Amino acid sequence: MDLALILLLSVAAVSGCGVPSYQPDTNRVVNGEEARPYSWPWQISLESFFPTCGGTLIAPNWVLTAAHCITFHTYRVVLAEHDMNKEEGPEQFIMVEKMFIHPKWNDNCVSCGNDIALLKLETSAVINDKVLPACLPQHSETLAHNEPCYPALSSANTQLIWTGGPKATTLQQALLPVVDHSICSRSDWWGSSAKTTMICAGGESKSACHGDSGGPLNCKGRDGKWYVQGVTSFVDGRGCNTPQRPTMFTRVASLYGKLNVLKQ
Image (cartoon, rainbow, N blue to C red; front, top):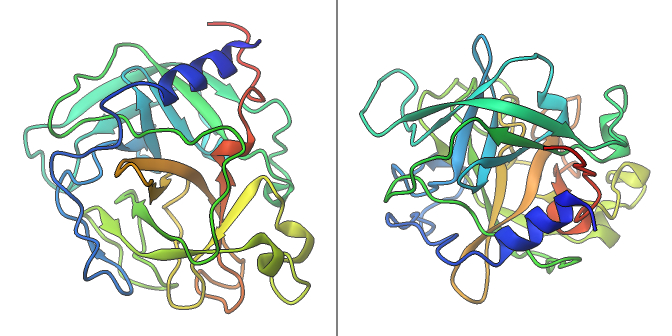
């Protein structure tokens, strides 16, 4: 059994994950809005020389993000950040010690899948009411068509949820219902670009957009906890809100044990 599988299985069983102290407001989200501060306490901002991507805290010293986000040698993560233009007090800044990219990731073919990476932090995050790991789904878990899920859209250069929209400085959220694979893989939708190792969600007026890469697709389980079911991967090249081209997320539940983290 490789260390990635041990890591993911152990984190999935950790108690206290996925239950924010500040509950997200999911009643009024239509086309996206500013998230309630600290209601997605596992959301991180991934930074090198500048903010580049989002990500998810899945354990005090582990972060999940997209493989295509890893283009530099040095990164840090910022936790408990709501407004990027202000230092509000609860932020935590932690350097990344090691980066583990899926061994089958091809940076010349994002639609080929495997767009996922694990980041080991130099020090563990301080878990408090504003910083908490997300829960991980069970191995091979699937989502129902139209299941309501919410990407927390990182304020790292986020263009809200439509092409050409204004850049946001605060964390955003949007309701993106899941689109079943049988629909998303139709020839007039994503076709063969929609793999079973991906999740399609949203579409048309609702979508993740540029700058949201690596962030979580948050879906609430029957136990009332929030699970990171997907990692934001790609949108249609013609625009974030192209009809029948929902946002594509790497499906976390399909990749247990395949990150092949063999050294720590």
